[in-house]
Length: 154
Image (cartoon, rainbow, N blue to C red; front, side, top):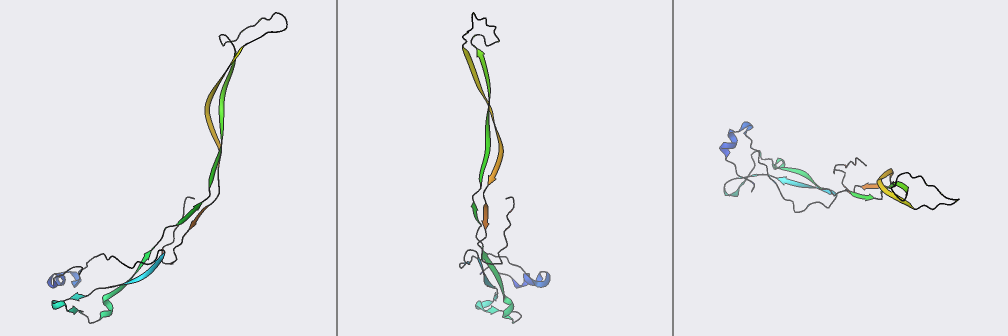
């Protein structure tokens, strides 16, 4: 039983109607991706569990509701990203000593110098970004009553 109503209270309401909301746990859900119908029947039970029907028309005591059990999307992805990374360096070459310009006087035709090379890494720069491959989306819901699914932002 979902609830009880007092006849005088219902009669005093607008249009002599009372709405009762309730939840029903369904034991026989449809298969994943499918829908099926469930009949919901309501009636009034009087004294001594007598089933009452004010208009003597049992056909309007039931309603059919469609219950769907949608499954998620199947997504496949072969997309691969790539880019070019360039490493920049600052390279300085100095004659050993004070690392400033020097004047060297050579006797004869030969001179010997000792050098210091300073290599300083700078920030790497990424360019030429690309993505190749495919992204596939499959809707395996078999019932047409399950709302279509829209894929955006791909």
